[in-house]
Length: 101
Image 1 (spheres, rainbow, N blue to C red):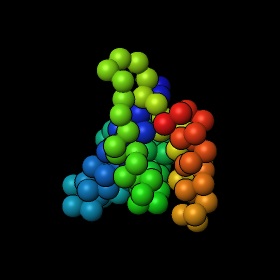
Image 2 (image 1 turned 90 degrees about the vertical axis):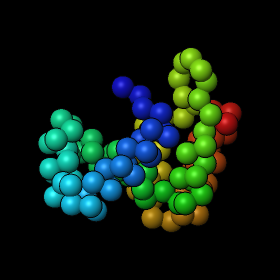
Image 3 (image 1 turned 60 degrees about the vertical axis):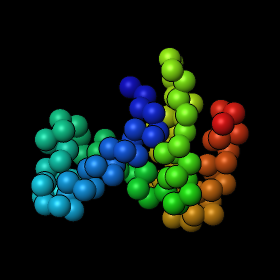
């Protein structure tokens, strides 16, 4: 299942809040309650590691009324683990150019 990248970011923010506010103890409990694997939850949470300007770009992506979002969460996966925001920004630019956004 392809998740629009803006939705993954929204989920990550919501999930982070549940942990921060003590609603759930940790990501393990959250994964269990969400009926997803811990590794999938990590993928959903990884957009929080993106440079702030990339997070902002993602949140303002326009989706067509019908059809697929221009960029999926899957396309963000290789970018989020990168520690250098400069390298993240270069990779993000490549993704955007590749899909014409």
